[in-house]
Structure formats: structure tokens, C-alpha cells
Image (cartoon, rainbow, N blue to C red; front, side):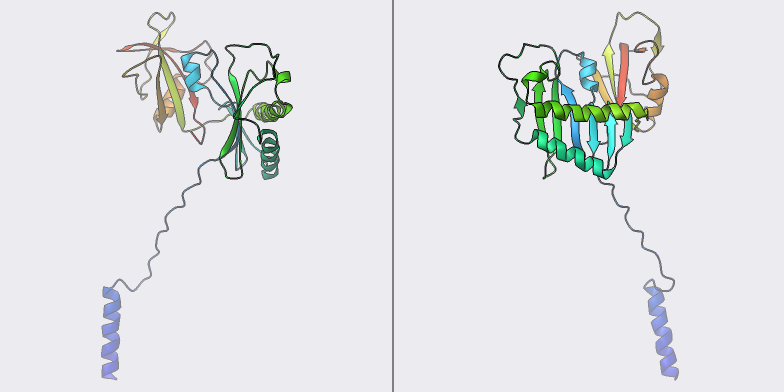
Length: 250
């Protein structure tokens, strides 16, 4: 009996020394959220636009795999999974087999300085199938009707999102400053808490902001200014400032 008691005491001492006793919970590593995956996109590229507009130009509409739809980086809505599937299936039908750069039929009028339309849909492998068409709206009758229908479908989603008037916001923005040394109007000191333009500014300075920098920027330069772009002054010069919210996949 004494031997059994001695062995039991020794065993309990060993368990305690090795971290036994009260069970401890093991903290599980938090699951990383899956990156936002675009499954359909309508955007413009090129054309005669300002340098600032070129940097800040957002897609007309992006549809994500989870049903999120963002139009012009300004409005958002969520569509059902069934509608996402229908949209992707229709766009695959329209775009599969089209060349990466579509060309209008002979006889199309010459149109210059107009942005090209880029239509995209996720293929079976998840990679985007893209088709680019110059001046699609202006010479639609000279392009395959499938491209016109694809743009109509995506334009409809963008309009629907805008009509719902649910603003899209993010904790990440892209800001652009353009030097305007001779600009007329009220000049305001550069917003506190926002990085100032530095280095080469040719033709514009751009930077992606996050964290506390974002509310500081939004407060100083509202997304829809009432009287044109604000003019800010720093030790290095005078700038007009513009920005937009970044999309989840940017």
C-alpha cells in the first residue's frame, strides 16, 4: 500500500512538472479571409484623359465571386449567388472565342481619343478572359453583337448598383496630387496626417493610403467636392488633390 501511494505521488508530481494539472486551451490561428476574386469586369482604358484621371480611373463595374458588385468605386450592392452564376455564364457565352483585341468590320467610321472598352469574365480556371474593343459604343453596329450584349449586361449591373445609392467605402484609398503653381482660388494648408507629395512629380504624384491617413484625407477633401477640386499648399508647391477608394482586389 505504501509503495502504491509513493508511486501515485511521484506520478502526480511528474505530471505537474510537465505542465499537467488544469487543461489549457490552445489558441487556434485565425483563418485568413480569402482574397476578393473578380469574376466579371467592365472597364475603360486609354483615350484622351488627364494624368490624374488616368491614375484614378476605376472599373465601371466589378462583380466578385461572393456576390459583391461595385460600380465606379463609388456604389455597392450584393446580388444572389444564382445571379452571379447567370452573369458569368452569359459573359462566357459572349466572350469565349473572341480575340483579345476585337476589330470592327470594314466601313466603320474612324473614332479617335475615345477610351477602349475592356470586357472580362472568369474562365473555368479562374483566370479572366479579356476582350478589348476600341470605341465600342460609338461603332457598336460594326462589332459582333456578343460584345455589345456583354457590355449591356455589365452596364445594367452598374446602373442598378448606382440606383440603390449605397455608397462604397474602404479603409484604403489612392490619392493623386497634381502640381498647379498658378492655380487661382483659396489655398489651404496640406491636410494634417496625410503624407505630402515628395520626390518626382511627373506628371502627378500618387500614393495609396491606409489606417488613420484615410479619415484625415476624407475630412479635408470630401469625395464629392462642392466647388471643384481643393487646392492645397505645401513647402514644396501648390497642388490639386483628388482620390478614390481602392477596390478589394487592388
